Every structure is written in C-alpha cells, then in structure tokens.
Length: 238
Image: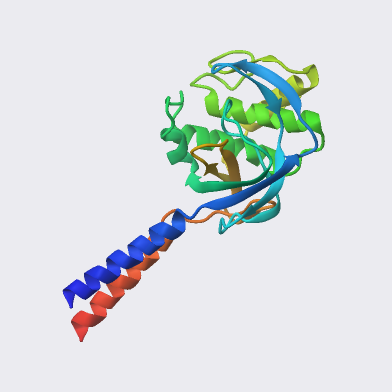
C-alpha cells in the first residue's frame, strides 16, 4: 500500500512538472505600430526598438490574440511567424539565472518592470513608433541598469543614438515609473534557449488586456501533492 501511494505521489508530481514546462507557441506578426533604430551599451547593441504583436498559445493564463510584448535581451536574434520551444519562467528566477549575471537582483528587476507597466496601465498597443520604441528602451534600462537611478544617459546602461522624440518619451516613461510606490503588475518571461526572450506582464490582481492572468508558480504540483496527501489520510483512517 505504501508503495502504491508513493508511486501515485511521484506520478502526480511528474505530471505537474511536465504541464508547467510545456512548450508554448509565440506567433509574431510584426511590430506594433512601428519601431525606431537605437544603439547603446553596456552591453553594446544596435537594433530596431519597438513593441511586437501577434498571438500566444499553449500558455494557460497568458494565451491572447492579439498579444503584445517587448524584447528582454539586447542581442539575441529571432524572426517573425511561429516561434516554438518557449517556456514560461517567473521574472525573478529568470533574471537571477542569467549568464553573465545581471547587475541587479531578479527581484529588483521584476519590481522595476512591474512599476513601469503599472505607470503605463499595462501592456497595450503603443500609439505610434515613438512610444513603441520608448517603452522598449525603458524596459531594457530597467533590466540592464545596476544600482544607479534609471536614466538613459548614465550608469551601466545608456543610449548613444536614437531620435530625440524617442529619447524624451523614454525618459518621461522612466520618470513616471519611478513615482510608482506599489506595483500592481507581475512579470514573467517567455524563455527560449535559441531565440529572443519576451516579456509577459499581467495584473497581479486579475487580468491584463493582451496577456491574461498570472498563473501561480507550482500550483499544479501543490494540488497534486495535496490530493496525494488526502489519499494517505483516508487510507490510514480506513
């Protein structure tokens, strides 16, 4: 009997782990209302900055069509169309696991991004190319800056070239985020081993247009173990 219960617990836990690690599909159709070229460092980069739109599937709690997102990495490539092999990772854990290590802790970066999108009112389709690029630059500043104040002109991450309008808009976005006391948004990451990683941003108390609800990390595994424990309790009483 004990062996049967042990096997049941193991099977449920493995099943839960497989569900939580299920690969999701991101289908990117293009930029959301345009992009603007930008370059800077550190690390050095030169790329098109802007939001992306498309559809996300096989990601319970996050599925959306249309889906809006922003790049996490500065130098990783990707293409448009169906992008497979992604998994959903919690923001804090993801940022803590990067190699080389990021200059701030995962919790700090996730909190910065949460405040950023709290000030923006969530992840919505940007009004134009300037706003699209400005939000992307603010995202990168939040991720790659160290203990310095979030600014595009100094610290560990800086912008060396973009249009004046984008620079002004990004600076205003960062200033507004700095005034947020409590974030109401949670950050997760669409992670790939071979392609660009993307943001998943959701309202901590419910849903966010385009990105769905926040799944509880490990909730399936906890439910499975709880059911197994209930079975053990009933067996003993019998």
